[in-house]
Length: 110
Image 1 (tube, rainbow, N blue to C red):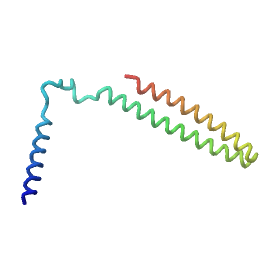
Image 2 (image 1 turned 90 degrees about the vertical axis):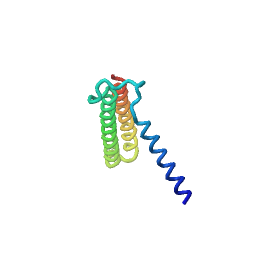
Image 3 (image 1 turned 120 degrees about the vertical axis):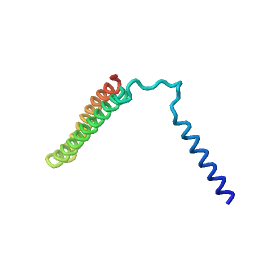
Image 4 (image 1 turned 90 degrees about the horizontal axis):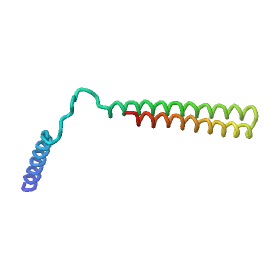
């Protein structure tokens, strides 16, 4: 019984402390217009869209690499498939690096 009372008192005191800390602090300036998104939200949106674009283009290029190497294997055997695969890997890296540059630009744009 005594343990329940202690735990109950602790819960009540912590919840009161939590409520007291949610009150606005007069030393902290309020947002100029809380209804409008900030530049951080806009930047996050641009970065998110650029990330999806990067993932989509790299995934598409990877599928093209796999398909072309399978086609090269069927028509010319393992050496042609290996060469086609390596060419596709280089192309995929090139696309990924270009998209990463655009992602960095989106992140740095205010």
